[in-house]
Image (tube, rainbow, N blue to C red; front, side, top):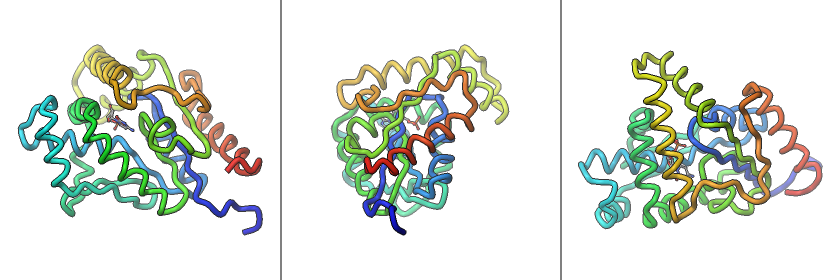
Length: 232
Ligand code: DC
C-alpha cells in the first residue's frame, strides 16, 4: 500500500512487574495488526526448567549447559506468544509469581541473556512486532522504531496484581504480593547485565492515573505519528 513502510516495524515496551505491559502490548499489537511477543516468557521458561531440574538459580555453569542443550522456542500465534520446550507448548506452566521469581534470578546470568536475546532478535523476521519486557528498547532492539516505558509506583502495581490474583482465587495478602514485586524490581533494576532502565529515547508513560484503554490509545497515536513522520 502506498505510504506503508516496507521494513518491519518494531515497537518496544519495557517496564517493571505488574505495570500492565502484557495487556497493553497485546492491545497495541491488535490495534496495529502487528505480532505480539512477550520476552519475559522466555526467561520464565528457563526459570521453570531450572526448577524442574532441582537446580539453584545460582548454579550458573549447569544452567548455561542446560540452556545450550534445550530447544526453547518462542512461537508467535495470533494475538499471543507461546513458549515451546522440546516441541511442547509449556506456556500454561509459566504463569504465577513463583516462576516470575525464578525467571528474574536466571535473567541475571550472561549465558541465559545471550541465548534469549538472540532468539528474540530473530522474531523481527516474521514482520512488524510489538515486544514487551525489561531490556527491549535498550538491548534487544536498541534501534526499535518506537519505544515506550510504562511505569507506576510499587503500591499501584502491587494493588493491581493483588486484585487480579484474588479474582483468580489467590488467598494471600496484599503485603505478600507487594513484597514479591518489590524483590523482583530490585533484582531487575540492579543487575549488572541489561538492567531495567528506560531507554534514553523512550516515551515514559506513568499509567497510575489512566485506564488501560487510554494508555493504549496514547501508544497507538504515538506509533502512527512516528510511522507517518517517516521515522521508521
Ligand atoms: O515480564 P515477566 O514478569 O514475565 O518477566 C519475568 C522476569 O524475566 C523478570 O522479572 C525479569 C526477566 N526479564 C528480563 O530480564 N528481560 C526481559 N526482556 C524480560 C523479562
